[in-house]
Length: 253
Figure 1 (cartoon, rainbow, N blue to C red):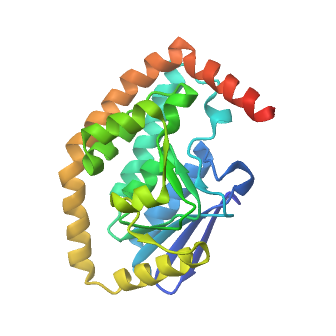
Figure 2: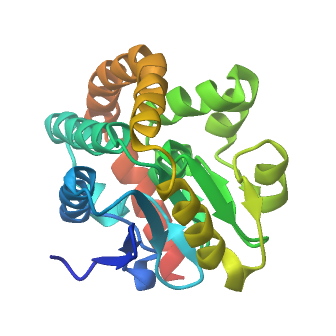
């Protein structure tokens, strides 16, 4: 198992911890593969009845895609990248067991999307969430799908085109963060909720989650098909690499 992803158990609750705090827990393809394997294993394990995903440190749940990995993509590699996200999101969407997201900090880009694919989210007043991909020259395809389902088209357009991050109070007010607690209580609250959910009737839990997946499947299929087409064009244009170079230059200063 990669040290970039830590796995642990608290009774019948399994915990996945993103462990790259020096890079704001930004994930790479190997990290996502490790998480997919863990999710599949937990899904099949009768001793696991709920899952928590969180991040190490106190700055970020995850900054999303590690831009240094995506910098040199061409259109063909971008298509393969979309297929990797399809596998990751399919694993999350296919869980028979509840997934609680313990937001220890910022959730941006794909990490914002993953947080929204969780069932219940716990955060603290310092958390920020949003879809800043446009600022790195990356077109958004999966983000608008999940945001539109939860927030409606108007706010989806605003968040996608501005790339702004919402503060915790706004996230809480519009229902993206279900429980807002002090920073040092986030994991404890998430564990309390996950333990409560783990005690629910498992067949009803599985069928409820199955129904949520069925309700959103057409949009998911559409966004992946759009992602293949749109990301190929975006990366073949060279704009993502140029914008990432600007980002790296500003960060270095």
